Amino acid sequence: MERADDRAAAGDAEAVVEAYEDDGSVVLFEAENPLAWVEATRTVALRDAA
Image (cartoon, helix red, strand yellow):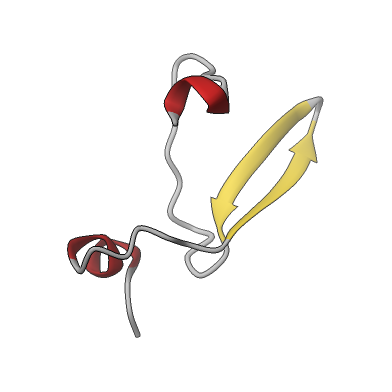
């Protein structure tokens, strides 16, 4: 099974990302590894992170 960090190391940074809404917020997650959580202390607009 290929992991996300293996793909990034190989130069393929694409991942299947899914989203759902929870209490007015949008949660993004990698479909192939939905339990790989990242917690942040602040929100970031996607346009600012790209």
